[in-house]
Amino acid sequence: MTLLDKEPVKRAEEALKKFDSNQKVIILESSAKTAAEAASSLSCEIGAIVKSLLFKTEKSYVLCLVSGDQKASLNKIKKILNIKDLSMAKAEDVKNITGYTIGGVSPIGHLSDIPIIIDGTLNRFKYLFAAAGHPNCVFKTKFEDLKKLTNGSIKEITE
Picture 1 (cartoon, rainbow, N blue to C red):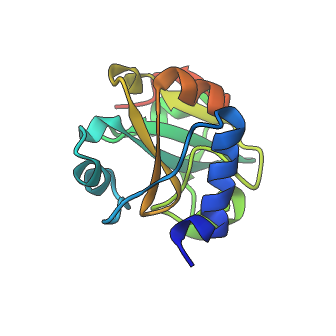
Picture 2: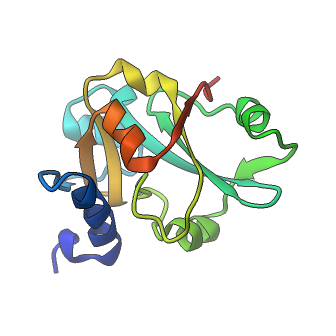
């Protein structure tokens, strides 16, 4: 069984191909669990790696897509969402809500419909790389396409 046969990878690839049939999942020789590992595997800047971070709010969840060289600001996200409580989602919740395990959380193909906020600093790069359902699988995209793919809103959410 190859990585492309794994259900989470298939789900990410399906969402990707629905958007652009020429798109494909890239399988990396080494793990891209962290932004640094992904950048090293892809020989790109760490900032061009899209981190998919799931946060738990008082009533629901929000997925924040953050540049690999940035840190999400809980205060900025709380302000944008107009809420008091926000925390990183537990691994179990990440799996249940997105259908992906941490290290391979893709910005697309989720099990649940979750609002998505995109870090505006990702716009610095011509190409971005995001996880595709497994720590060794990514896809390449452009900022504008990431916005269309995820239907995310672009905000300043980093420290």
